Length: 257
Image 1 (cartoon, one colour):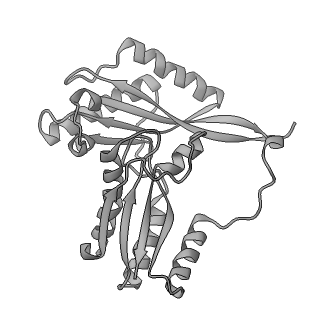
Image 2 (image 1 turned 180 degrees about the vertical axis):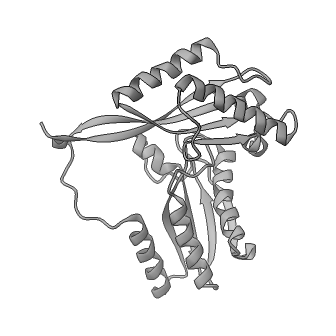
Image 3 (image 1 turned 90 degrees about the vertical axis):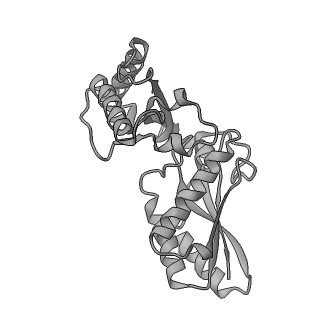
């Protein structure tokens, strides 16, 4: 029977004791399980993110996060690669609205699982526009139409439970920046969303990531607003698959002119 490989995403979280960078025996076993699946070709590690709580200085916490990262990499027996590892230190802990120190003493191993999907269960795909082509088309229609306000869904998605963009999402942000730079009369209401349960702080942080990017590129803050909407306005409901959840971990924009 013909079919193809699909991908779903998951996270293995390794927690550490206060001011420690030692991987516990039970976590070593879990990491070795990832190694086995990686060698089988059924799993691929996407990125590894190391964090700390806010105890200590910023410099020390960055060093501690790097030691935690290296401890996990040592178990996985892979070298640190810029494209696969990220040292956040206390960055996300400082953004947390409901700070719990123990939750941030961790390393997250984010990976994709390859799943065989039968072609008989999937209808034949029709030609569709790429995300970039669709966004440009919607923006152009907005400019030509008499409508003064429009909501546009961006292809700007985030890692589960984080205000960190998935790899490759910057292209969509750049298109958004270029549009706002070209049409200076247009304003943007940036809206952050989450999947899988309530987390207002995370939705706010996701909106702020996009806002900060645009302001950093030179777009005037007076043209932008940013707000989190928790999980109150899902793009897909109910969330039945990992893909549904991924699409709800997003930012969208209301444009006005």
